[in-house]
Image 1 (tube, rainbow, N blue to C red):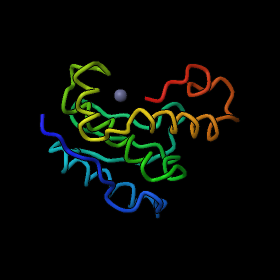
Image 2 (cartoon, helix red, strand yellow; image 1 turned 90 degrees about the horizontal axis):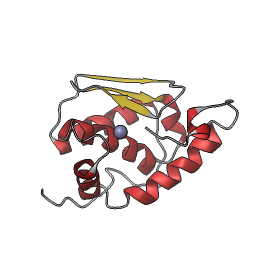
Image 3 (cartoon, helix red, strand yellow; image 1 turned 180 degrees about the vertical axis):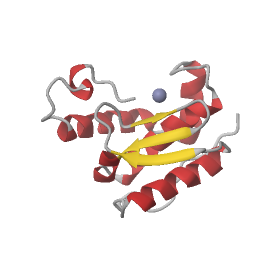
Length: 135
Ligand SMILES: [Zn+2]
């Protein structure tokens, strides 16, 4: 596997401008990972930050617009890495790919967890809160 140091495509401090900005980042990362996105949708999702099908249909939670850019990119890369190793689940190979693209992903996953509990605190028995699952 080629080591690719993570550099955000724009300043990490910069917030998302709008839905198109988020979509642009997803397309950019897909190109960087060499995977094909067949469909890209941004809509409110109640239980997850994102999901992806084996054929490359990516759905992103519109709430990602409220989290810092690097965490949004983390979610995007997480989903796209599933296309690189569809049989790995969240196993060893998956984590190796994720670490290659985002060396800080473990820290960011914890940060995202914070945002999940802030964003979804009001929702009773929400998966984020009840089982602390992010994806
Ligand atoms: Zn996943």
